[in-house]
Length: 334
Image 1: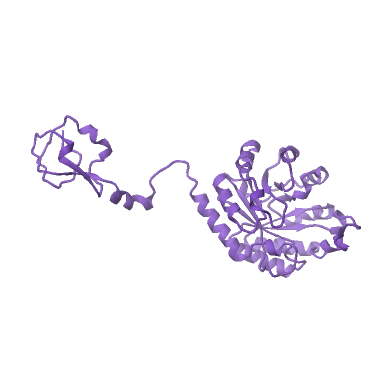
Image 2: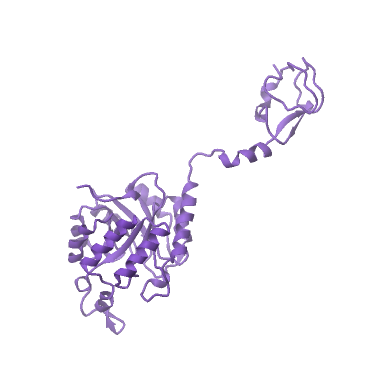
């Protein structure tokens, strides 16, 4: 069976923008659908979620403050039927669907959602048990590297040997300090692992996401919501629709500038003609007169003979009469 659309693995593609909706749907299918719609409208190419059963990956006695951590996460769960509807809605909207998957029931559900890839969250960077289960899905992987040491990133790449994969630079702080990111590892990882690399950006300002494209980032993941004033742990650090649109537009601007050979652009040709110079005769020149640079002056605009090649006229003589003010052109001297 042909698996799933994985555009970010194709060479020469512009940045693959992931709207990390995550928990921001607050357990509401309708809100999750609206967030997918908004992400697609504002240029994201993937809407990403987190799929779990809280009792299957959080200890029942774990605390969040004075309350239950398990119960806290339970409010962000959707039923299997709701996940199926949500993934179908994403496909109908024309945006890729994917999720970080945390436990056995969610892994069992995941193939029915026809996702583009499976995400390994930063917290599972050392979880070989989960990774081995996820590998049985036979999907491409994206994994985040928040809290990880370089040796742990190396190890994850080894664990995923033989699978399509991409690695995201990440800082697991909410919001993160831009200075805590190490952007140079993105091109290093691309070279070392021979796979796409990008950024999972938890900073409030998207400047690092946009800048990362200039050094080869293929993927940008940012938290996304339709309204930062909604309740939930990630809403305030998330991009609203206009923020996402900025990331999409500006990252594409940077991408379009990544030409490896310097050349004159179409947009520059008018300026080139006006700003460069040509040689103009300072006096009347008769046939047979030798070419002397003193008889000419370099003035704007350009045209005729390229003055960078003026040395080619040494020892040549005028082939025709040249009136004062004429622009030097090929064939005047032989």
